[in-house]
Amino acid sequence: MLDHVGFQCSDLFRSAAFYDAALAPLGVVRMMDFQVAIGYGTPPKPDFWISVFDSGEGFRESHIAFAAADRATVRAFFDASVAAGAEVLHEPRLWPEYHPDYYGAFVRDPDGNNVEAVCHAPEAS
Picture (cartoon, rainbow, N blue to C red):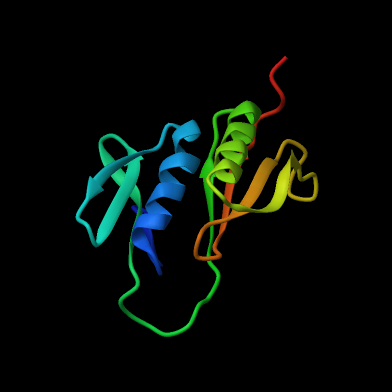
């Protein structure tokens, strides 16, 4: 349904350092860097963009969830995010109120957005 999504950042380079670390365990890499906008994804194109804050006023929290292949990858995302300085919103765990196999972790990026990694598959045996 979506082709790509983007967030404006108060400090692009601080946010880029966070996303470089947080998205690496998910296999997502920095694919384009225009100094005012940076695109992340898996080839062939970037799906997630961060850019300098240049329009609008104030802050409104956004939420984005990145797909993880398995629960270990959710935990790796969480560990990398916390090591990169992210505020912990929710440690990795099951969220049965969403569905029985929903396993996610939530952190805040440097601008205060709610960033999640989620796996919808059951625990591997």
